[in-house]
Length: 244
Image (tube, rainbow, N blue to C red; front, top):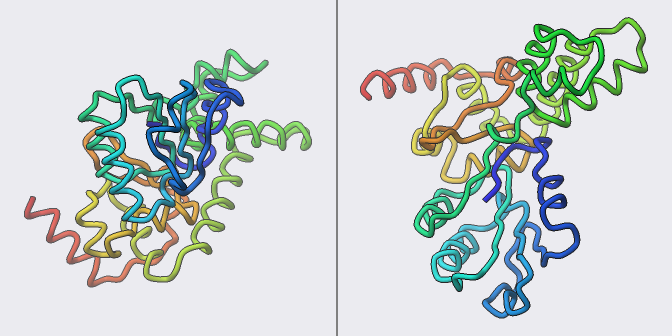
């Protein structure tokens, strides 16, 4: 299973691993069944954050009951808890955003004239997102004298504004809560935004990510702190957190 926000290299990783030698589904299960694995080819289900609740239940059941020699890869911006549980049950492998982020050391090795301090600032601003880092270098080369860190910050701000425009007003308020918190669990998020709030945010391009214990965080959270938060909702959330 590969889970990370858009731009972290999921598709590149899958192409590198399988090339064209895979059966692929995107955002749906189609006619997936055991016969798809008869020839030994891997099956890749991409954009799994777009699956319906019914498809999520079917996929989780398939993961649990698939033949032992099956090679199934599920990839998405955020993947349903039910599928996570099934993957853990069969001792599957999880590659998450933390494993896909670009560390400062790699940035220094791959560029000329960048100090480790600058690379650390770049990695922090971009949250290690490979697409943001590559785009920032490309734009900085076209603008002599510009700072790649500043360019990356501009890209992150622009991406955050675009993502906020893709979700409705109620969901933007949930983004505001996430941006001002150290992470929230799925149950709290569902309380304030409904049962599929995380999937809606992911589909809109909001960079939600899950940590090792299932808490949902917002990558590049500082760029989303302009999102509104209702006073009463913030007080209610604070009360919930104090009781835990």
